[in-house]
Length: 108
Length: 235
Image (cartoon, rainbow over all chains, first blue to last red):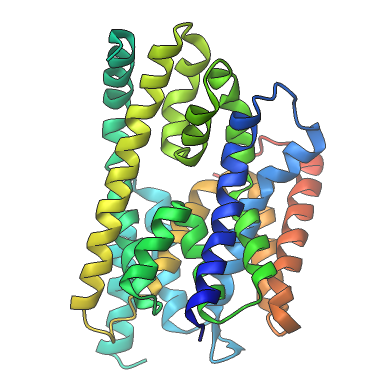
């Protein structure tokens, strides 16, 4: 996996990539506005990045795309619950419930 | 203590308190995810203090654990955090007359919930002591709550059985945020293109596929916006 110094370097980098954007305008005290096209593009970055991380985690099993693995069923439940309920615990409870039921209960 | 600061602190704290409860499951899940991914307790809490951003932490975790190159980890974190540039730009005027020390602290503590609660009043309130109190009290409360419950998650993960697929809780956490983001059609397009491209490109060397997928997703969202307009609701 990783050794000690490398992992702290990775944390430092993630920290820079977090506190740079957070502090940017507050610390510089800019009144300057970002160009309209850039502002618009920035709005799509988090959704694109989250999906790029999540989808392979759900859809890929053992290196191959498998649309019928237990994680997909759990993901469908999570998305359904998140769309319908404001309860912050439910997606975790039901999503993990479905995953564990299929994996441990049915041995999938 | 300046009485205007105290009034501001009280008002800000009261406004954020109900919303702050939402941080609790996130923080617990983040703690469990950091530990389940194989970080030591010191590494997990160290990352939590220096990064202090659930999405960026959980989002980069798989890359960090698999030993991905540093530039990829940095770029991914940046993509996940670009929304903060917009938040920062939106609230910056509220801090203009404050010393650098306070502005640095304010930047470090800027999280989604505090931004949502504080921005409006920050820009309307003329008294800078009130403004600072109104921001810093809920921001500090958010920090304490986050650190405390991540710590509970980190400790709890050691007690929980190893074979419960707990690492999937991180994926659930990211999916919940994603659902809240994609209620507009161009956002949904950006997410679908980014996600599917990432699946399709997963065998690219150096995990370059993730970055290419993010760029494709951003481009698709941009194009969709100009096709459908920005307000096309998906539901």
